[in-house]
Image (cartoon, rainbow over all chains, first blue to last red; front, side, top):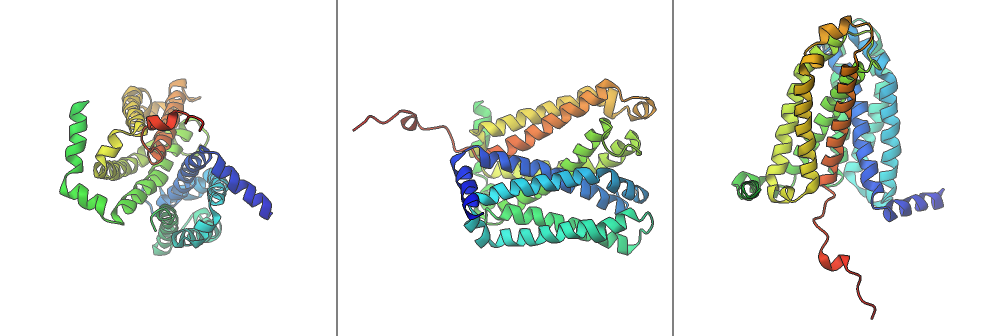
Length: 149
Length: 178
């Protein structure tokens, strides 16, 4: 395991194009995952799409969200492998990973339950959508700030 | 393009551009906002195109998806372009010499052309698309082209940061053996 991780790190260092390529796929796939989740949030908030569409949006974009998340994690792991020590020491990285884990758990528990229940559009529902948006935006900000802290 | 070059130089000398480029957190905050817009509003563009292809949200009409998301996509675009202009304005001289920046601007111009070309038959004609038994080829073509162009914009945008200027001549010549 340790040796394999080192081989991956070496591959990321040896190939000039691997890091940028992984990062481009990383960005495109978080647009896919966060975009589809944001659509559910906006319909829960009753802005853009209608509240009653939330369940259907969540169901029909679910596979796309999951595809995006899998690609994010896969490419994210490649990026991480390029310099594991730097990332582990980086406070913004740790913040990001914490938010990411919370956001994923939240997305498939509370968020999913509320989105799939076809009723409810009060403050509670709006709060659920707001927390979701806040968590994902924190992930993006945390990710970007890795390069600046 | 001497005019653009001198504009880039002028822009770089502005007080606000200097303050902006000089402050430690303003740049990453604007960049992160730019990126968040890509995630949320780029995601909406993705969904609109996938709906035209008939891959998602099939029980929602094309009119609903295109029409309801339109104001949000416009709002997102304005915020995204504002952040982008701030980023480019703060280091205008650097961006001017960056080929990926110009690739990105070219792709964005092509997207403007794209929206003009397909406005009448696709994006402004959603009621007819709702009635069509199968999605017309033009709508699918518009969706595929839009996806390709936007993915190109994101890729070129990210590559701007990797460009380190032209390779110095000395580096490209193999050093003579001692």
